[in-house]
Length: 457
Image (cartoon, rainbow, N blue to C red):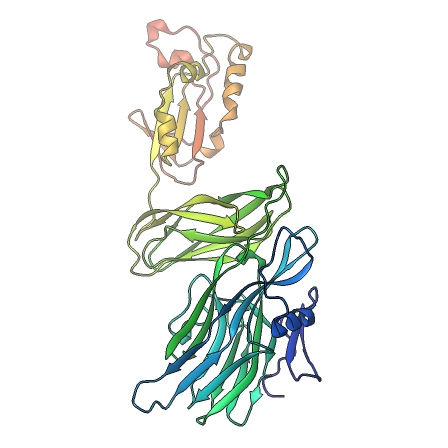
């Protein structure tokens, strides 16, 4: 049969019903046959009641989306009339948890009716968060994979039916019917799309487009129900982090980071990642776009040649439709890499750090500066290591920049000049210069614990 597809990803397969001639693609974990019967016969027309917790598929929302379109002119050559409805169908388990969501284009009693004049193309898709105007952008916001459709794909006497699988990287599909230049009437029309659960709590758009690019025609907004609120103490919650927390990119380039959603309580729901606050011409993609915490996604921010220089706080978020958390990624766009800003603090010995340090170092650190602490002496006062070593080791909570890493640093007229930018944000140099080397000759008291420092000149 023309247009029949035998596979789509590992978990799905296609079959053909000999009794009805209707193509059906069945998920391994869902009885789509039952869903199709419910959709096409419209046996259940009342909204789903979460309070009843009745397991199984049920029509949650039903909207009449009929319309008529004609091209311009006294005697239009192309016309489309759709008579039908769109349904949002939800599958709940015994605990009222939503385990499946489908959107169905159908009609009563067993499907919609489509009347065509000329050769217009009628496209059925599911869009989120917004519909498209240009047919070339049909896959940009498309979601949902076809699980059942009628008529089957093929070339008929007065029209052509096409099933377009995988129109984007999310695996979204399109069902389309095109006239062949003569009057055509298509009956028992139906197309059912399986929706990902991370759209729970969101507003999706059921779009029937006449084209190419003739008319959006009918866009129906449908609110996908959110998961029920679990009992207190068992609510799903998570945190969001990004690593690294900042990045630099030249205009026209891209930069990446890893976004992690960490489960903190409850049973994990699927969360969808998003980014906002991007500069002009920049876009963000996530791979994968959604996952169940604890999980990670690769964030890629791409810029255009026209993206203006500057530093932009980008909000990176994850949401399951009910709970949303976010973190900030600091994006710097510039024609040349930003140079490191150093804040250097010099102290006689570790006691000076504890007694006399100002809060400026905290402000410098929060501003992203690299901090370098130089402790000139061990504060030995002529005494053995048992007197001063414990205090130096207490400072060891901070990273010690040891002698073998001092290459690239040089002293000129008493000022330390870092000649490299790859040092940690917080570094400390223990010079352990003996006290008498810092005092005038008459005041020198001892000559011990002098340790030469390599890399200084």
